[in-house]
Length: 263
Image 1 (cartoon, helix red, strand yellow):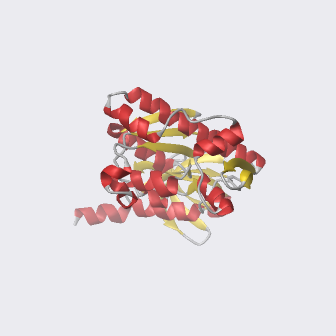
Image 2 (image 1 turned 135 degrees about the vertical axis):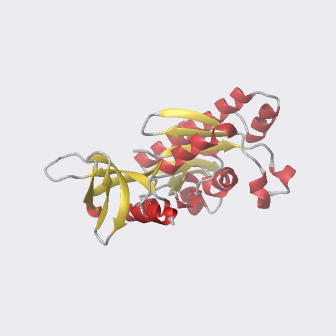
Image 3 (image 1 turned 180 degrees about the horizontal axis):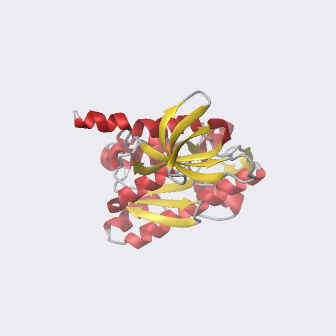
């Protein structure tokens, strides 16, 4: 499981950039993350954007709260990777679909988990301007933790709870299974970008999938061919036997790429 939970803090507030139509001007101070594959929390500053890009380019899914409407559009101008190609599980979607309106992360966590946020976004902007960077990181990672725990509760139990002004306490059904991107789409992306992929592959006569790092050379209807770094040789893989696939940040060249560069 390589999903990444994220939350961001901004340099400015909406009134300073002319409203929500100018999200790209808000800036980013910290991107808080949780990695399921390593069980690690980390807060990236602007200077660490390259490391953040590597992490996000390798995840099969970004998980967050209201990330489609806020975090991702705010973050997009500040990274060189295309965030639109990464599957997103936004916990807000099922909540808004059921209620017809949005509620806060604090509301959901308080009613579902009996936990509260440690502050407000506007406070984080002031802390950053006052040089209290570690305080901002701690606040951001606390939001990541709450988002992770809310996600895990909803995924396990199939519902979360909120309180609304007009309807009182509401039990909201959710379906938070992480979206699965088709392996073939990832392979096509890898071939187009000339980036290796890490695949989990069900080999014959083995009960558990085997991990391979592969350069994708061609893709057919049911099979793709590439150079396997483990075998140090070209081989074919049946796409139906791939149980997991993710891009890496390692590039490679095909023969015709090399020939073109020599012309």
